Amino acid sequence: MKKILLCVGCLLFAASASAQALWQDIPVDATVAEVQALVPEAQTLPAGPAADGGTVQLEIPAYELAGESFKVSFVFKADRLQRITLLADAGSADKARALGQRLTTSLRARYGLERSTRSRGSTSSVTIDRQWSFRRTIVHLQVVDVRFVSLEYSAQVPVRNNRL
Image 1 (cartoon, rainbow, N blue to C red):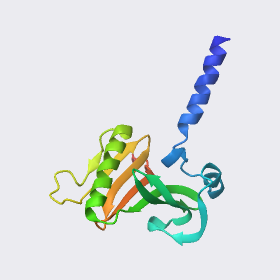
Image 2: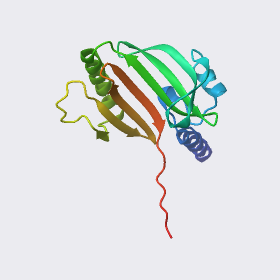
Image 3: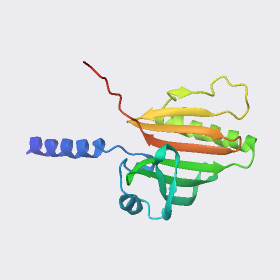
């Protein structure tokens, strides 16, 4: 009996671990309806274009994070969720830098040290461009246009080797 329970537990764990999650445990490739079921505050938008050929179909106009209000955009490609972008207007370069530092501290606590950064050793007071990789999810934090802070969650594209 113990073996059966152990096997069932392992199967349930494997099934839950196999789904790649982005922000707030929302799975990659979820449909609009699935995202709305998981995030009821997400509002439907007329499909608007996004970078990389995707479309923004859902949005949370104001989400509180690290003491700032972020707009959350859900980007779909072929009606499947590909990435989630959080964007805040900090109002000034100093506030954007402070918010970026608070988010960096939080992300390091959750995901560890960043896998890459273009801002390490930078002499600019506002440059932040950091990236984490965690369970096939890429988390990208950057200060954009001096006063905007962007936090993006996307799926990591698997590397394919062309062996002959």
